[in-house]
Image (cartoon, rainbow, N blue to C red):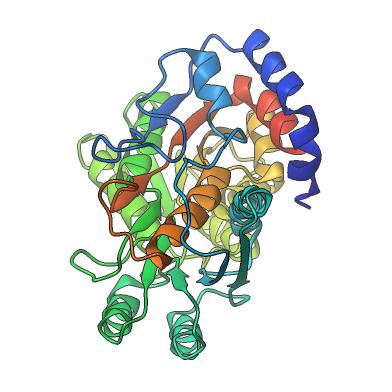
Length: 370
């Protein structure tokens, strides 16, 4: 499914030119500053672009170069585990592959395992981490499945001398001893921004439901909290249902049908992961509902629903940059470099909110499909 990224490297300059020429009148909103405490920015971007074409082109940024740090070894071996097998993490992996290739061009070999269960499970992640910590990896990276369960395990690993980082969209709990995090540091704001867009679309009145994702997953829970706090600001808006779909399209589809059966006058659905906008859109299309959907990320089917006006807006995370910067950070951690001169304790990546008029550009950029 993700061969489009490799093919896209050849065509990306032409595509970016097309994007600039085709930039739409409504500028996508970006969350995330790209800040890293005034240090070198590994992602090659800082601040939020105000021009529409800049915002669109940086939503998924393929143009990365290693930041000039000179590794101390010529071979590294990493272990990364994440919530569940899913195309979102395939995109992260492609950013990792790009960094791996650039290091190889410098004569530095990087190998890594990139493993996850078929369904999100903190228990499964625990078993994987306990196994990996005894296998002499240079760094272990974790996309945290449940911060309450996993964070104490990461503390124990660090105390035993294992070099641990977190990455992707879910950091560990506040105060965890993990060395650094690369990914989305603003999931709460993403949920609030998407919900604000929905509220404005509904003229600040109506009934809404929230599809969260996996119980305990920090990114999903934080987005849902941002959504709830935003709805609470408007007295004429009401949350009538909050459901967990475990990042499953099929379960999100079933839950949406049930919610619409219980509340046929439902005005909006807030979707907090990449899978549930697709499941929700399938359900409302089948039922002929005019319920407004807002959600996360860049699933190809979701982008088509966005193009067709079934989904109102999507918050697209820059998975490619997350993967690239994760490898750069892991190399430095392996060398014993602590956050400071070369990287931040938290490397923040962008989320870009896109609308119907942006969908064709995104489909072409990511999938060669419009």
